[in-house]
Length: 329
Ligand code: COA
Image (cartoon, rainbow, N blue to C red; front, side, top):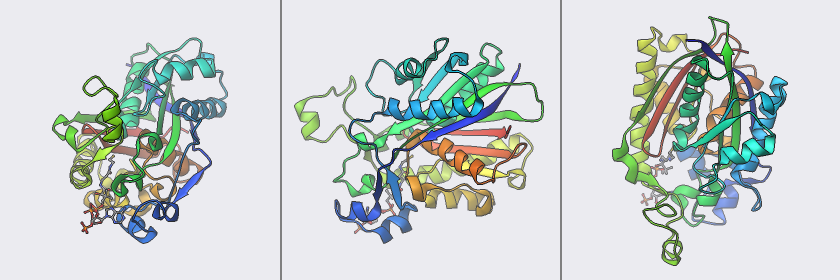
């Protein structure tokens, strides 16, 4: 088996910002409640004519620019998203065409907030199997398209954004991909979903009138599951690789709620100065939170070559995922 490493990151968030005060004009909420209960201060929202592939293309281009290679060098594109431009063709196809990745195949990966961790796991294996040299993993979501801005339980949480990692073969034994721990618990499917628009409940006048094309969530159930599972997968993946929380340079968790992140860090015994939290600026961008948080950590000098980094996420499904990497640049 070969080894995989991350060689470049690119991110994109649409320029328009929706603050807590803006939301307080739309639903019965306020800045104090949102900050205390979630940690979110603002989120970015795409303009009406911007779709997920547009965000993904910007992120992909930025990653390729950072690496200094043409798109034609990419072997595969994995777009992790729950808000594709349309059901088909896959957003990966739209991105492949737009960036000119003429040698790439690819697909969309639906795992909600765990999407990027699943995408990274998949890319690492494509590369480690020596069948692919360069795989682009993109987490991109335009959550504002499936959010009911009359539902204060969900509209405060989500934002739009995209991030891409380039995963490549690694001849350096020291750094790169170490391990993954991904799980599904489908018994939690009811607690977070968009009910209509698929083959179970195709779009109709009724599904629109009954607001079935929006995110429906039982926030309490999701919260409890996330707190339990984030800790469980992090401690298991550390344990089985002979590491303790002290060995981790940075925990980069999915950004769903600051209280979930705080609880995870506390249970693991990782001080907050070794946890990346940027939910205040972006909210929950679903598949994009992990690359956005990584980009912020790299840019602020918190993540350097050789650092042990732990990724962890829980999302609709329920999906659960953790990855351990030793940072490569
Ligand atoms: N503004 C003001 N008050 C609000 C509110 C808002 N936006 N949303 C809910 N409330 C109210 C509730 O109506 C309730 O009032 P009541 O006590 O009079 O009934 C009170 O605040 C507490 O509601 P509750 O739902 O218990 O709040 P919470 O602390 O659990 O926070 C979430 C709600 C949604 C923020 C929280 O459950 C959560 O983050 N869950 C996880 C969601 C998630 O991560 N989803 C994505 C998964 S990847």
